[in-house]
Length: 320
Image 1 (cartoon, one colour):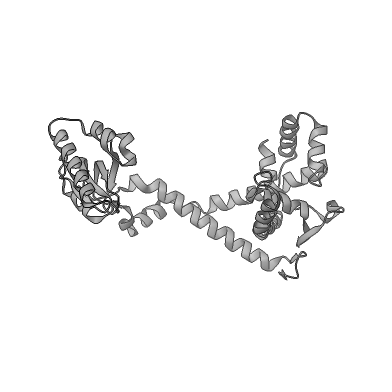
Image 2: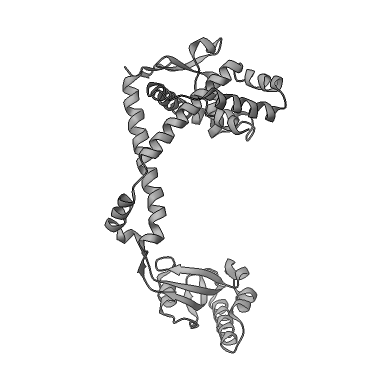
């Protein structure tokens, strides 16, 4: 099963193996067939999830993207071959054995890959090509790993990105007022909110009051909104009130367009800059991903100039 997921990436195989299949595109000395493209499309739009014309239309929408992916992967295979990247026979044998085990027999595996336009030799070639690309991508990943100095420099130059704004752990009760409410209905809602606040001041547990009275969806959590940073609460008058509270303090009833609010402040946190240790792993991941993608894209663009690409299902072609 391990490899069949990788197999759906579908690298093309040689012209000699293409047989009677419709050729969609050529990349250098390799071809991409209709069955390759159908399997590539399965990554974006698995068959069976929709029905009839809906499936056909959605798969067509992803067709160009899937084809471009296959072209890119084939270009990377050419580069891997150029760099002399090899895949051991033992690795290929191991993947074949895993697939035979999953299907229950060699015959069942052969029947399955036949539907993809492959025989066992073709499958071995596809496994080899896919692993060659994976090894190339591993090389790129290794070469684009940022150093400790790179990470520290990025952190020091971007300290503003790692500021954590002032925050308060907030508990909240909302007595909702419909915009179409009459003045009498509004007064009743306000009276209810004031009564609830008095009950809390007299000793009623805030979370119990929230669960019993609040129209907020957080009532099931006792009105616990969690840690709220400045800029998260709307409207502004609600945020201003929340951040004026001391830890453990209960707010007055506050009227907004949503209704009447009662809040209680929990833990308060001042604005602070996250330490290097707090964010270095995140910076490393972000820098690595950015550099990896830039390097891979630059390589693919250079390979498009090096290898002739011809798309046969349209009049468009490029390359040299």
